[in-house]
Length: 478
Image (cartoon, rainbow, N blue to C red):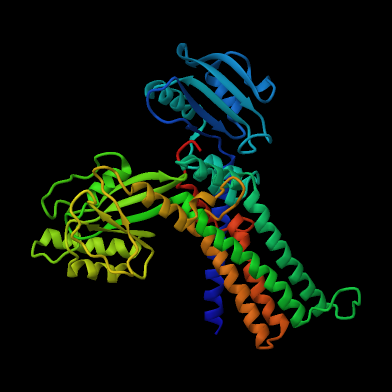
């Protein structure tokens, strides 16, 4: 028994030492000044090299010929030259921003130089030679988070803003950066905290008459409000996913019904090869178009049919996999051919999924007979008939014209949605225990877990490994 205890003691000691060393390394890392190129690499009129940290001013001062940057006012711009000993490297404008009123809450210096790989890299190397460390991807935003300027949800929104491809994606990201999402989450957490506080007072100080008694009925009423707020947040997350990622739309059907022609027509470009030869498309062809400010990620699949061709079989297998994953399926039929057994088999695969039927080649003689229970759109890709009707149908199905990213706030990634779902599950578990008359002090555990999950969502609490992983997805210089 003594040996077992001694062994545990050493394990605990080693673990604590590791934690101490890790914290010291992270602290030392935060004390280092970092530098990176903040603009896209390549030819351009201007490039920006950013430096952040306690030594940012002195490091840039070593290579700057102009005013003494350690003596200038905050948020001012200064003309001069970047020097490598006696050699002029570039004519620049240097912006000085002093802590704490900066992006990272540290001193920041931004060197605006002439664009071009050679000049920009030379300036960056000079900064590193004079004491700066090359920043890791996302390290400037990571410091903004660690220094308390932004929370985790706002930090993730910075990445979303950089990667936004539409005005609605930009508006969604800005709502999170501006703190709208944070306010909603903090309000829900505050309600949870009030519940926890009332439970604690009732348990620890039952003699206090001025504190409302936390009965199971009162607790149920409070938790139902929290449950409702979380459910609304998660329902809106589905809209956020559509804004951020768009809709994955699969074009499926037998070979040579016009799937590739429909893809080209919707994209307004010749993305896919179109021939009269059956089985031309053997692999997935993708393209993106925009409807009502939302991206449609179109996937032209191989024709689904029975075949002895091994390559075509692989294409058919991929097509069936796409059917299971797509948000929307457009089932394409040929107006000039009779309905075949394979068409009916495809319909059986998609009828329980969100789908539309587009009967193509309306400019040719009608030979197809559509079953009465199949709703469809008739058109053709030669004269572009039926395409507007198809687009309008998609808009109606997903209410795309009613999505207002400027006014609403949505969870914007899998991590956030997962944590919100876990929080909701904890609240639902608590409500279930109330129905079973479980003591309130045991139900409290679920509420506390729910509160902590939402804290992880905005970074009120966090794990170092998670933070490191999240910010590695950012571009260098941000």
